[in-house]
Length: 301
Image 1 (cartoon, rainbow, N blue to C red):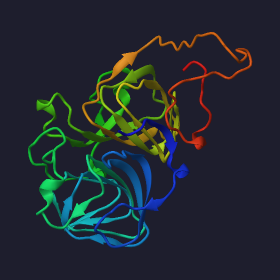
Image 2: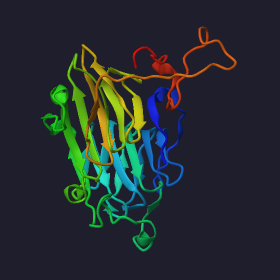
Image 3: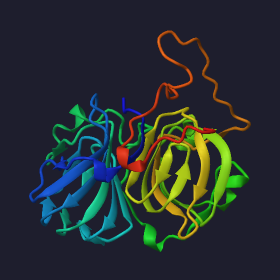
């Protein structure tokens, strides 16, 4: 299981050798979120040299989002804003990456394993490709820079000014109670705000690409990340006045907004060995969080 990570600024994280098995070249990664049970992970990867890997088969569902640089997948040349998804066990073309390329790479339901041969594919493919179905998956390649921003399709009048670009929707989702994965870009226009708390029946993670968004856990600036398990309340959003805010989102199901208003946080009890007047507030269950995002705002949250 992945831990609750809220408002981690990636500059606070260590660089590690990139987990890109079977390739040749130099690359490093920062682990934004990591499931030590099955190897699922969300990472930012920088290629310090040209990198190449032949065609083969991933052991996990894999997603790449190009933030800068160039990736060649088979005969297709992909630049900034390109998105690729390859389900586990699917034959993926050879890939070549230019030095200096910067990408977000996500793994789900598996580790960094990569096989050049299909003969051992049955040993690591347990879900048939799509995360919500046993149907074979397909390679998804999208150029988000050529997509138009669409209105927010999710519930909530206050959130109607948000804009989305849908990069991936599990094709099995409508037949499986919307449990399939969703990947998208989101943009909040300058000055956008929503003073409600929300929570969802699915996990939600995002990497902040541009601008800033202030909310109860801190401020999402460029390079800030969160992984939020299902049912964690969050909110009181205010987007920056200059550029608004944009981010890369992943969810393991349809984004249903459960709304809370007139919220209250009450912590009561009898002090045993400390002075209630002088001791700082105590909050249980604060998620993982990095220091550079600033102090917790304990007033009115």
